[in-house]
Length: 290
Image (cartoon, rainbow, N blue to C red):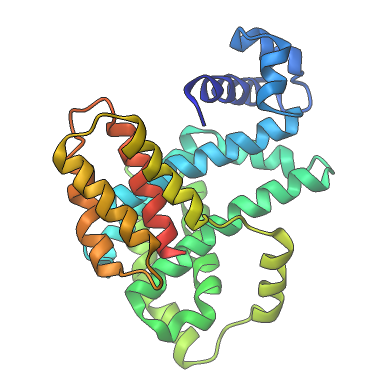
């Protein structure tokens, strides 16, 4: 998403939070963003496509920070997951996601509800995979249910803490306690057959939502753009070229990619291309994990 489109998305989100999605018109967005009607329709076919772009931007922001935090770290470290989870919650709170979801789910519009479901499914799928990385493949059949339980506990504890005006109760404190509880719950899911969600129906839901996956060609084009259109230093060029080569391999050599990503990002520190490198790193990391 280019810089100007991001600016329009941020103005639209501010309006949606102030007035509500239904009460905000396209003209309101145009006037707030200081753009022409033609520019708006060049970016979005409708107001609801703009809503989708808002959710995508929030998800991309969280994904970027999560992947950057994980580079060079042990994925089995529970403290790393606590930090990553805390980032998601803080971003969602900062962006007023709960209020947006509330309106979208009560809108009666099937497409808008699907946007929310896609967002939540992606968030839960990420958490499910992280839980498997930490607690082992034995959890895989019930990882999504574990993610639902974990996410629900965090949300309701934070909500209740705010409701009773409990001072000192923050996101990280809640996450630490929740993951201690999860060790007991995960043991029950794996060894005590306590799972209640129908895994076949979950698969059908995922298929029906048609969650987009990052394509190999998309990642390769990001590297091609960087390599061909910008003047890179020799370390930057060598690392970008090496990563591009690794992305072409089937199967992916995860250990090699993991060893290259941090040096790749570090090589752009202090450069005007640093943010672009961060986005490429994040997309590479997620392509590798999906």
